[in-house]
Image (cartoon, rainbow, N blue to C red):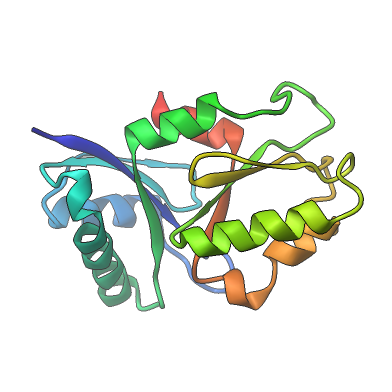
Length: 179
């Protein structure tokens, strides 16, 4: 039985790391995955394979190794099933249609990091300007448009120590991936 997976790459097409979508899709096809599709130019790949969720760690390690070899950067990904992503999208707790806000979902490959970030968010005093909510395996964040780099929570998630374990995506991008 085939499982549909979503790989969310961190740090591509920023900071001098350029990965074209066509090249990224080709790499996934070369790994033997089916129904490969990329979304936007920010490192989002949906694909199918016979690897069951129990093999997530080895699947993740194999993709990261292939990314390092093919594109020459210290690659890492967050890997989840399409069903897990659908659940995260459908549980978004804020008004996703609020034109004054950016609806984000924060993912991590380390549950302890998500717990640490949730604790940090809870300690921030301006929860109306910078709302964060916990979800199953994710954090939801809904900052005002134009403030995604300077809110208190943005400064927390921007710390170097989270670089290798977290990535965020706009809810609208995630909706396209699961469609």
